[in-house]
Image 1: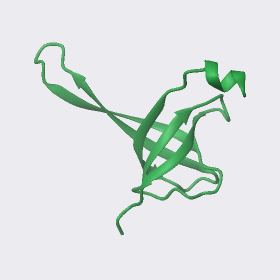
Image 2: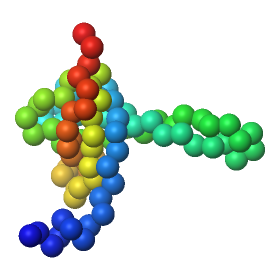
Image 3: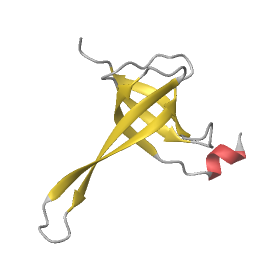
Length: 89
């Protein structure tokens, strides 16, 4: 049993790969719905994160699950856990 992985609650998010040009890195765009404070309508907010992809399996258009991790580089703070859906070519 690894005590460190059990105690840390890491965020997991689902997003779409928008770039896979870097080696072992994928840029993932995450969509979130936020309620507008005045108009009370839901607005889409997008965030781009860089995620570590060890085997270079991700390609543009894939839906992936990413998990928060320790800093791997200056901007990379996420890791690809699994590919949920491949891009339709």
